[in-house]
Image (cartoon, rainbow, N blue to C red; front, side, top):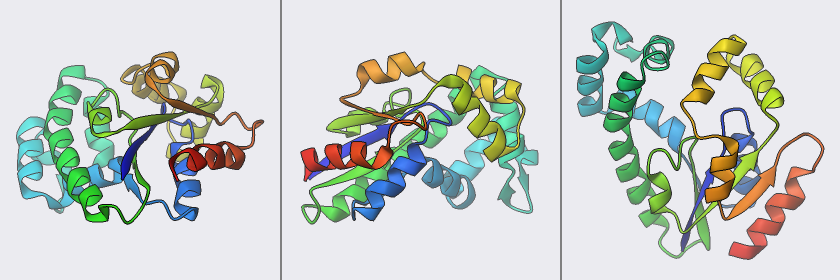
Length: 193
């Protein structure tokens, strides 16, 4: 079974593309969601995050993701340290999850916003990147997360550029609202099936 990475900058449409793969019965590991779950339920992660960012980032034993984002997206050293806590736990979760499929499916997908930056691409046989014009990405994130343009740009500054991502990728899906997504996904799906 192949392990395929799916990545792209914030607001590129990774989740939409992942949903299309799911409709094709391809298992998708959502690294960002797993990371959120680990922030809540993994006691080692919780204690390390509290040591790094303070107890205030947990309210009623729930991670205050907004407070965490406010801290780490304005302090690159704290972001790096947080990633140092979360990435190994996410890697381990993905390994266990993907091993469970063994050879029952032709491939599975690891969807991750920072697949290359985190080193998560090392767990993948090939990588698909989703691209979209930067103005469209900013607009999508502002609408989705109800944040300012400046906040979106700060998050983008912590990710590789689209050019860097596509250069490192084996396959590219264009999500510009013009080119249809489904035929692009089906073409790639046929390569792995």
